[in-house]
Image 1: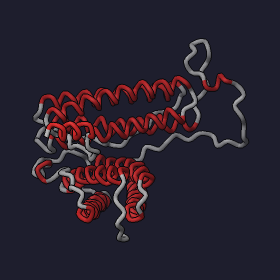
Image 2 (image 1 turned 45 degrees about the vertical axis):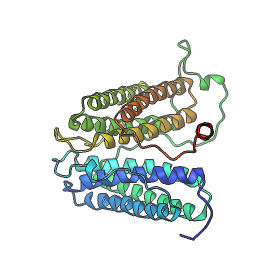
Image 3 (image 1 turned 180 degrees about the horizontal axis):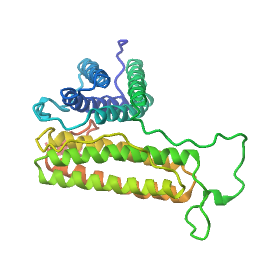
Image 4 (image 1 turned 90 degrees about the vertical axis):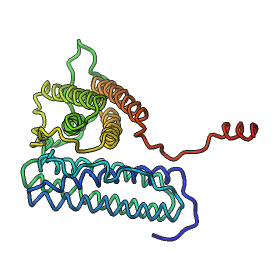
Length: 339
């Protein structure tokens, strides 16, 4: 990285801090997964993902030290029990890394656009590159093993056309027949079924291994929300005679042994909720049928409320690390007057 005396901007500080928190969590989860994976095709890709997270943490720590930027606490060895019995199938681990690589690509491209300093841009350009490669590698393994839920095939258009009626956008009027789903709408419904399916299994695994009653109930509620959203999306597809995705075996074991700290599990679900709200917002913007738009907006609100209740639990238990921010100038002025 090139040397510079230019101070970090708020966008760069936010990106680096968030990146460190996410990778410190990912490293522990991947480390736990590695001890039980038996599939020789899947094991190397999980090892590679672990190496990426470890490398990011090393690079980020170097940046923090150079900038005299307090290194976040993040997550450490105390947040995982490596002696706990296996919790996830090999297929789940592969699906998980594929999904988190997809989340990472969105995050890194966003971080890149928020940064102006060349060394930080170089770091995120490289991070985006290796994460894209990780996504492609996991997808290739899924395809070879036949465990990838493919989007449905539709007829390739042979000619161009234009929308000739405002009814194309309508989907709420019970007296009008809804037009068939278009390719973009089908694709986002599929994607949100798959992401909710993974989230549902994670919530289940966290509920059954947490010793904290409040966390258990929170995770079980998350599982039910994900199940409800999946049903809404599946029903929308089935109404159009489009089959829902046939998901691979992403099962979890029946272990109830403490595996991850409540602090880390709550943070992880919070991260997935943020990604989910982003997915719904993108899907709503891409959908041109009004009933779909309203569904995504309604479900986004439900996820946001769920996420807020999770943040309340984290604050109550002192699990939520505070992001960097500015000083309260009014408070500083009052303190000066009092002194």
